Length: 113
Image 1 (cartoon, rainbow, N blue to C red):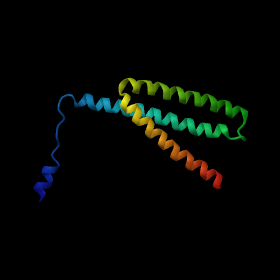
Image 2: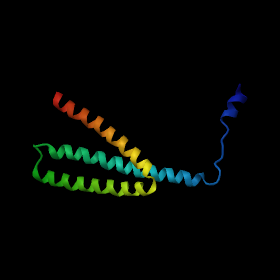
Image 3: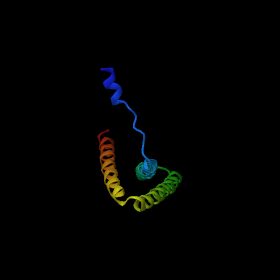
Image 4: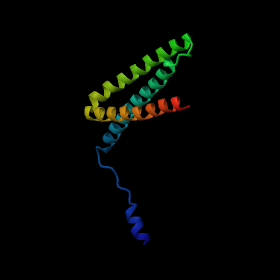
C-alpha cells in the first residue's frame, strides 16, 4: 500500500519550455488581477460618489480615484488584448457577471435595511 502511494507522489520535472508557459500564466493572471481590482475599486468608489450625503471635497477625491482605476483597467486590458484576446473576452464576461451579482446584492441589502 505504501509503495502505491509513493508512486502516485512522484514529482514530474518540467520539460524545457514550461518555464516560459509558467511565466506567461503569471503574466496573464497579473493582468487579470489588475483589471479585477481596479474594476471593483471603481464600483465601490462610484457607490460612495453617488451617495447624496458625501461632501464635495470627498466627491472630488473619489472622482480622481475612479479616473485612476479606469486608467489602470484600460492599460491592463490593452496588454491582455495583445497577449491573449480570447482570455480577455472570457475574463471580462466573468468579471461583469461577478460585479452584477455582487453589486445587485449590495443594492438589495441597502434597500432592505
